[in-house]
Image (tube, rainbow, N blue to C red; front, side):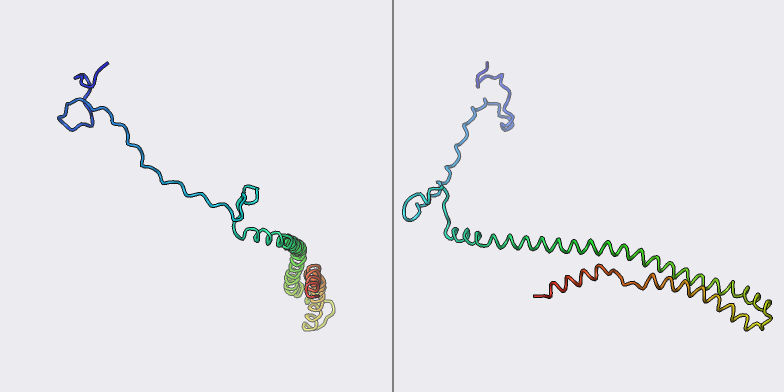
Length: 193
């Protein structure tokens, strides 16, 4: 074991250069400054006692807030239920509208396809059948060319009008009748007092 004055001690790394003296003993740390005194205790509630015996201090006006909350709570529950009912009501409307819109989309696309087909057939019949029928009518009847063209055009237009009638029957139904009826009932129910 070595003593502080022993020359075999290693030099102090924190000592200034050239100082080869013995190391000083470590100084004890200074005590921390005294902390602030605790805040003074609250005075007891007026009228003596411990404030009700439940261990909780009541703040001024706290009883009024509790009474107001108790009075308002049933109305808040009714409002929440009403909002949930309205949300469910509109969710049901959305389901009906979405389903009916999908059905109407399919129906309308079918009708438009028929109209497009009608237009194509009218053009095709006007071009192809026109020339052939005019030649056929003129050859069989011996009528002049103008009358033969008129007879062929009448036959072509008859076929086109048949297709147009089928497309019209498909497209003439009112759009989304269930949704309209449901919204009319809703509006009637909301407008009645």
